[in-house]
Image 1: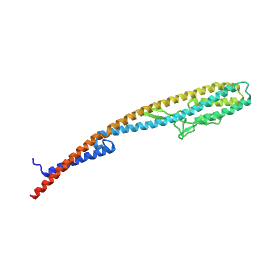
Image 2: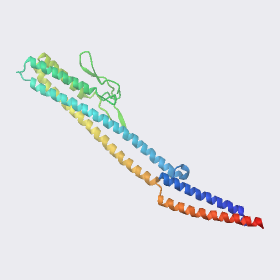
Image 3: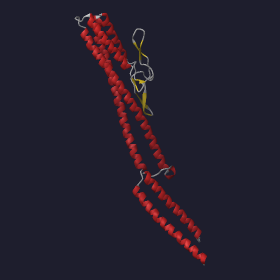
Image 4: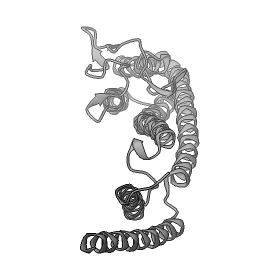
Amino acid sequence: MRVTQNQMYDNLTVGINKQLKIKNDANAAISSGTRFQRPAQAGLDYKISLDLRHTQSQIKGNVEALSIADSRLSASQTMLNDISNALTRAQTLAVQQSSAQNSAGEQLTAAVEVRHLLDQVANSANQTWMGEALFAGTDTSATAFVQDATGAYQYQGSNQDRTAAINTNQSINTNVRGDEAAFTNAFTALQSFITALETGDRQGITDAIGNLTTATNDVIDLTSRVGGQISAIQSYKASYDDMSFAIDKRLSEHESADVAKLVVDMQMADTALQASYSQIANLKNMSLINYLR
């Protein structure tokens, strides 16, 4: 079959465009550092990248949620430690005031200090973090504890826990609720101790030693439980960090441009282009000679 000059010219033009595309794609890959910049360049590879980035985004969201939970629980743990310290001081006062040698004046003076300790416990129990109540459950705008007409502190938060997602099927509690018995026992023990001191009830003062000891142990146990929650969250965060690192590495390997190969491809494309340009020039010369004949 006879191939005309026009057909030869068209074939060379197609080849030139192909080589120019190779050069342009190689330049773009070298500039961006990635093998492809749009779906048309590598459909399946592009989808794999999207899937990996979607997973990375989910991991980032989970890590952020767990980091917030970690900070919230750490703040809760600090407040619980403050409550425990206040109760420990009250225990010391109870032991001191249980002696029959203490006068009514000394008991009243001690009552003033214990009332300050009660205020300190109430302040810690109503503490906020980032503008949200620490111990009010999901009702973060509530004041966790308020005093009723008798002066007793009553829990006003919700009975639901705040949670953070670990994965699509699992979540973890990220708060401490004020309806835990430790809070009630702490308030009750302190208020009973104050009443005993103010009324000179020596048996009540003696009973306060055991009540405050029990309340302190309850708070310590709750604090330890919070520590376990924090440790679990930090463990999950570490796992997610490892996963994120592995995905970053896989993305890098999957998308990274092979610069050395791209340079060779560009050089080969240049060589092919020069050859094509030379053949086009020869075709034009042949056409001119035929015209002159």
